[in-house]
Length: 197
Ligand SMILES: C[S@@+](CC[C@H](N)C(=O)[O-])C[C@H]1O[C@@H](n2cnc3c(N)ncnc32)[C@H](O)[C@@H]1O
Image (cartoon, rainbow, N blue to C red; front, side):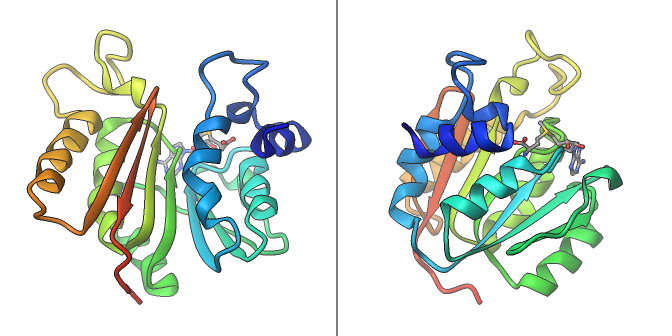
């Protein structure tokens, strides 16, 4: 069985349970994206904790990783082996900069927080320069005002529009991006392996 599906079922994380939400989940994508990094010593940040199961999935999947989670809901803050969580709003730049001061950089970032384009853009702008390997954004269907007008109003730039600009810069080799992997409702930006901290 797919390892993310197995761990998703163990910890009740629906984004890894294709049996529950056929075609809407990410367990096969994450297997592709994360398998080459599985045994690396990593610092992983996930934005959006909720019940906390996904942080435990990352912790169990990556045996040598330190997992960091942030959320705006104090009920989701907890501490476990190799997991630290913080009460931080992803669009609070000052609080996010404090987090960066503490951790210096992250090897992997997963944005599964508020899903408003405005928030996703602020977070991407702030954290992409401090991401060593992979920056992931989930649930990109919220970029489409015809489906989610509250998350991405038609007169504002969406996170998918910003990602398309990044494609242009990457193609012209104007950034430290190695490749960009677009999937259904998902994108992973791979950085060149620059030392950031
Ligand atoms: C879809 S849940 C994701 C939970 C978890 N990552 C998972 O896979 O099960 C989204 C979480 O993001 C949190 N959230 C919403 N807005 C946020 C914000 N502005 N900053 C940080 N977290 C936020 C919510 O409280 C919620 O726990």
